Image 1 (spheres, rainbow, N blue to C red):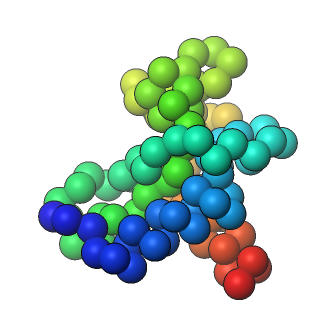
Image 2: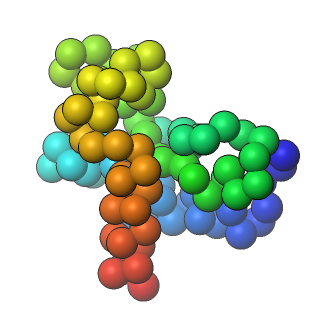
Length: 97
């Protein structure tokens, strides 16, 4: 399922306004990263159920930066569930207009 223009625009806002949500929660802005799909890439609405994450928090982290792949439990223990992070991102974007 190819993302729409509107979905890609949402991704851009996540990157430019919020940056990596995990880094933001750690107190810093990091606009370098990629989109993480929380519930697969083929379901209806899947391209809006995403987080923008830097490489360490997405796939290459360790103890200092737990990554959602493959350590989802450690990641969620530190930052909250992925669903709660999606809501947090939506709230931030709403506040920023």
